[in-house]
Length: 72
Image (cartoon, rainbow, N blue to C red; front, top):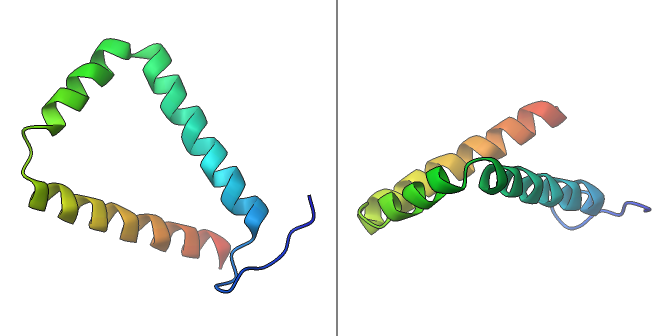
């Protein structure tokens, strides 16, 4: 697949590869540890929305930082 740049400079094929890896890892977790994944999903329901929002923001920022460090 020929890569082409989008506005912020991310290659589409790298973005698709990242998405495929997320699907693989998540699928592997559900395959290997189905009961643990069920318990984790239920435990998320007890976490306040604001705490989930902050955790998600921190994880997203760490992910962006890691990607930037790997690319530079």
